[in-house]
Length: 321
Ligand SMILES: C[S@@+](CC[C@H](N)C(=O)[O-])C[C@H]1O[C@@H](n2cnc3c(N)ncnc32)[C@H](O)[C@@H]1O
Image (cartoon, rainbow, N blue to C red; front, side, top):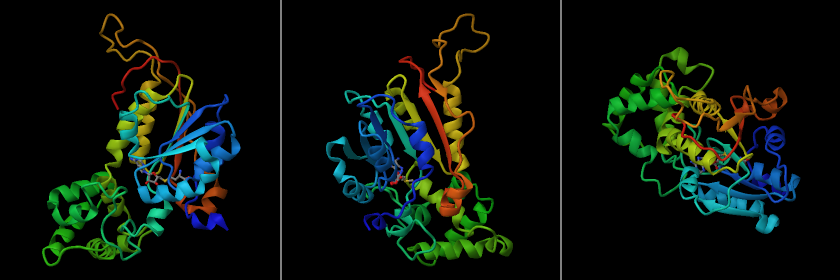
């Protein structure tokens, strides 16, 4: 009965819980993207000695997690913050032994938030995870210059028709301001060639993803949290990251790879000045992906990838990624 209030399927639950299982009593997991609390619930119920701090930028979804996890009392606490911000202000707080980052947005955002994340609903063009964010989807589509809009749709959506789409948006908004997700989706659909319009995915999928990424600075925050989260992690601790598209996965893959190298000094340098030691051990040589059974139950999981790394010691060296 209770569970029906929660609309999100947690990705690779089994794999996440077994790879990030605590190995000592009293350890701390920071769930950087708690959402409705699906992964955290799984950890709290399986590992009775584990404590959890759950972060989310979105105060509305966090209310749902608080309700869902209330029975775990003071084993779980909540912070309404962006994950990168949390680790920036981290000094003085207990160091985590486990960190989970499950990127992107929750089913809740598509189904219940009313903030225009999906082209399937007639909702205002907002797309902010946090209502205090000064930038919204409406500002991007109504105020950005055509060239900036096209670049953003190309870069964050990998959309090959970005120029046509930006041109159509600018033309339409000169007649009337764009207010709803439906309206934007219609403009995009009519701006692309018919074959693309009737293709495998909705023609507005990539543009909507791009605008959402820009509104919430998703890639900038990811780069920043990776550095600071691994720095905060206890030596021997584990970090797991679930990505949903190649832009995110590329960042995580290169970041782990970079910190997995011993010496990073230029070859012509006579003596090593970087410390010469790896910061992490990459546990997942290849990323884990959902089983065909999981994809069948939850098709939205099909593009997800899980990468896990262990912090080796207290030695720290910034990554260039
Ligand atoms: C994919 S959902 C997490 C689902 C969750 N693991 C579960 O099993 O229910 C991602 C969540 O992270 C939040 N989020 C995304 N970017 C964030 C950021 N930079 N800082 C904090 N929370 C963020 C979103 O609001 C969303 O609730």
